Image (cartoon, rainbow over all chains, first blue to last red; front, top):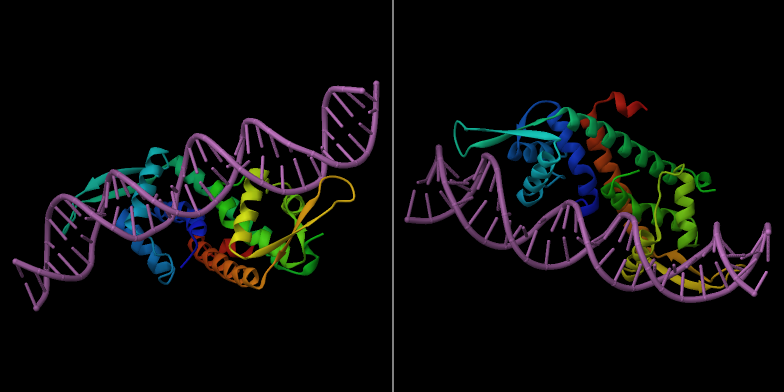
Length: 112
Length: 112
DNA sequence: TGAGGCTATGTCGTACCGCGATATAGTGGT
DNA sequence: ACCACTATATCGCGGTACGACATAGCCTCA
């Protein structure tokens, strides 16, 4: 679907944004990303869980184990204050690069 | 400046877009990217030249050596038909991911 | 003459990361 | 009993940004 690089660039902002709306567990986050992208953001467990661990190690999110009503226990994540600040800078970086691309893809005079 | 991942996601589209306007050599491409990003896209030689070699190997660009009027000889690159087609799909992938992010971040950011 | 700076291209090593493969385990349907 | 879905975890491979280093031509200033 999307290139490895594009996935890499959008993974963290998407996960942090989802968590900024409230706590969620890994598998749920995968499903939500799949839904809101019309099936285009196909993450696998080998992609998501290592990312969640990295985000936790860096202090961007925190985790709590909770039993499920039906099925295996779940690890619920919450975004931290540090995570929110990182999300804001991720947003601004993305929008900055986007504006450069739009400028490039616009009229021919975009390049000196 | 920008995260490694964002750089990785935008490098190829930016280089291919610049070359879609006409031939250019590596060092020139670095300078142009620096200019049109107001100094934010700071690529180094260790980033750019291996990329150019990869793009050439993949058949997205082709190269011709030419002497410089003053200074070392230059390797001029041109985008190929395959490269143009890759650029189009890069564009559409980027815009697709962008629209997902904008949707996530809310309509107020879509205006700016 | 020569030292430093800019242009111009190249390679190597390190660190990081997406992702397929694999493992483990609880629950529910046929 | 078997399969599918849920849920988390780890390992290894391949790809890649980037700092460090190497090479070389040209120009300016002392």
